[in-house]
Length: 237
Image (cartoon, rainbow, N blue to C red; front, side, top):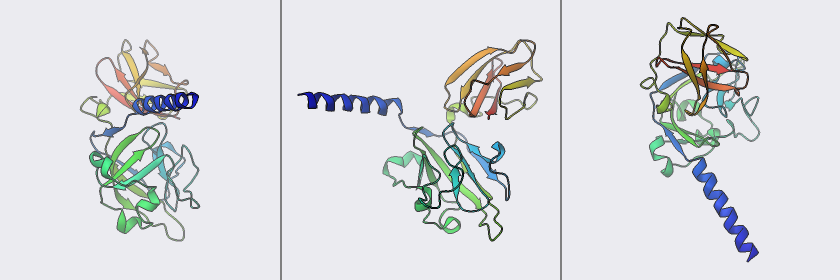
């Protein structure tokens, strides 16, 4: 009887966890990420910070990796980028696709098997499915170069259709460790900050300093939405 009770409890926990981390398909507008040959992969500008759990980049040779969890491509286990899995196809058909690690999926032939083909990136912890298509890949050579680019879908709840961007309004510094300052804005504006999944984390008023303390945020990409309807993306280091 006790054994049946334990099995029942485990089943309930699994059901709750599954519903709490329900799968999401990103269907928002396409965005393009590019890492230039020789670019410093430790810099935020050369990392595609998709969520707080997955930041895709590449060193001057070998494959892509998730710099949140690893310092470089794992050439031993070849399971980089960690916390991701990949398949050829489109995200809306994810249930019928066969997912594997990136190296196995492309069969270790990036140029011939990967470029300009529809692929799906599954962020395992976040349980998000993303349409992605690699558009360039530098093979490296003896000196290495490490360049690559792709286009991918975004979270439709944070697309430009929902947030009207205003180029005259700027954030500084961006990326930042401790605070951001909003430039060219009415100091009476109020704001809300969302994470990349669209969850509101904090809100407040810009007051006279136009400065927002972000020290308590985890490293990642966020959306600053003003009460006027304008929104800006920023990176917390």
